Length: 386
Image 1 (cartoon, rainbow, N blue to C red):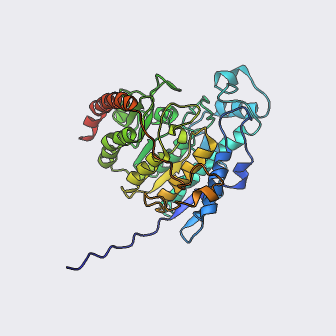
Image 2: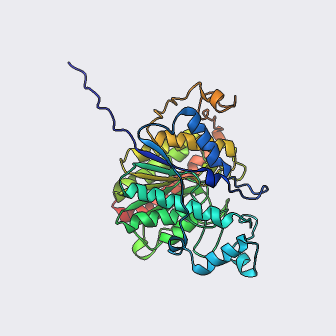
Image 3: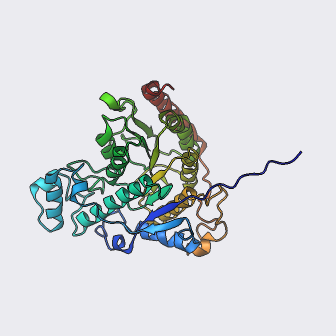
């Protein structure tokens, strides 16, 4: 009996949104947010030859501009933010979250946020034009910014602009946020809408900023059932996380039938992140991206959190390789990573070593997560025939 002949998969057309211009901008030295993570990611990808080829390209971002920015942020807020960047900090600015410990004032904050938003909008436009299948803006993912308030290192919400651009073109958008923090700004923007489903997996808000995103927060009006929150217990490990994805996220994608999937891949869920208390390896991120890719939809990906800069850059490089179809779950870079990454800590390449989970932690996390998954299903699945 003849063996079936496997058909070659079509190449993935991919755009990486980055430029030397965006590398010029930096938060204050004492701020945990490091803009240079994106440049480090690009350096790793260039070393591996993962940015070159007939179907890949780098795209230099352009600023979004006021016309776009005013579709979500208020004119007053943008004026106050621009004035603060110019050295004029007012009481009004402080009330808007500008000049706090997590949103410090610095000269480049308006320009950087504008350029980051422009990059995500460009990524959306490339997908809408059918020029690429995947677009990744590692500098994006500013999901905490609200219409008139800065928060959590975020001054302008590029995710809202990207999703809204896609939805405005008549696309059903499924936004999956796997950053460790609740996607509060994005949820707020689409809380009464059904054309963008917002699903956020994050450390429980009772133990982490911004203190929101619970199972019963499911949207209102036309948006009822289209905001989904999976608050994770402290110590969540790969197996538990992936179980939540299988039981909650994948059925919802199947039921919602999106035209486009937007994905925030903040790397602060990784074990050892200094601001978060989760225990993932980047293998979990790779597995999630593999599962999302299997739906065959165009993907708009953005960065987000991640406060161990080197681990974040490695994780984003791995995500890019999976998005582009280069990673076969066995890490094609095995044995090369220690040299090319100029490190002997991860000789297996881009993927992390597997973590050994303490049995007591496993038992606690599993019990807590079981309860969360049951509650999410009870709150949301009925809206989608699940």
